[in-house]
Amino acid sequence: MSELDAFRTEVREWLEANCPAEMREPVRDEGDVCWGGRNWVFKNDAQKAWLEACVAKGYTVPDWPKPYGGAGLTPEQTKILKQEMKRIHARSPLDSFGIWMLGPALLQFGTEEQKVEYLNPIARGEIRWCQGYSEPGSGSDLVSLQTFGEEVSDPVGGDHWVVNGSKIWTSYADKADWIFCLVRTDKANKYQGITFMLFDMASKGVTTKPILLISGNSPFCETFFDDVEVPKTQFIGEINRGWDVAKYLLGHEREMISGGGAGGDMVSIGGAFAKAFGKNAAGELDDPILRAEMAAFDVDVFAYRAMGERFMDMWKTGRAHPASSNMMKYVGTELNKRRHELVMSGGGSEALEWDSEATKGGARARGWLRTKANSIEGGTSEVMLNVIAKRILDLPGA
Image (cartoon, rainbow, N blue to C red; front, side, top):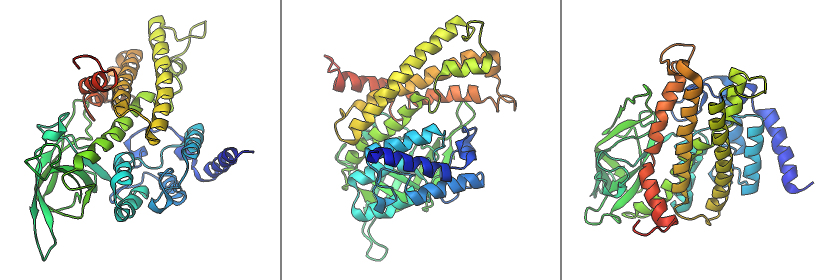
């Protein structure tokens, strides 16, 4: 037996012993997803036990080094762990912007002290982070941001910045404990005048206001900073060179958003509909047009999953094209929109229902409407196509 086979056996035995039965059921609502944080309330004992077991093993961030809360697994071992979790339909023990976005940036740009200070609470689910990038006048063109940090020398309280401005589309800002935030610290230099700051959302002068979407649900907020004091020790990378960190983090954000295109644990959308609505005498989904559309979609998803696995292997070893994340983000978001269009088509008039318990408060319709934001957040689809044309295809005039 090879070392990897032995590791697979070990993982399989550990999962059987530690993953509660309730954590192997499909996610049904927002409460089934554990985000952690200071104010997180576990939905049940099983959710708490699953997180604690994974934290103790380092499996919330399996490929992070052990000193930072991870398990120190190799890429091959991490892939095996994910395969075995998928095999038993285990839920993610912890969802976190700290894991998906800030963590990789800290590992790349943070000092040793910062890694120990910030990464361990992320891995344990103790601090929930949000991202302060977009502003009312600065979305896809982030370098035009206006939120400003004025440098203040204070021999008593310590040197700090006084931050004023606002952010928009800040996901879960009203529930987050800390924010990683792009702040202009030099008005004379557009690209080399931005600092990547970290600060507590409980700081004096920070307020949030949820943004109501057409779907009726909203993870997004407006976030306001009024004379917020940020110690000059709380930044990543170099002062005025935060754009370097921001660009690196954007790649991970786009990879995270693109993941919706893979469809999670769904094996086949056509198979799921055939199981739900029944088959004809030939054992097929009865509607031939819908059946053909779902079959074509399934083929594209399988190709995208294979492409995604290759992309992540190359990304983690530094061999991916810098604009590959733009390509993955575009394709993933478009696939996710197609999936929800098919769900609505297959659901008929019932899928349009908005309020009843039978449809879980119109979950399908609200989910379909929510996918429209996927092609905006993390960079619009139009911007992604422009980057692909210029950076990957090298098209003339792009």
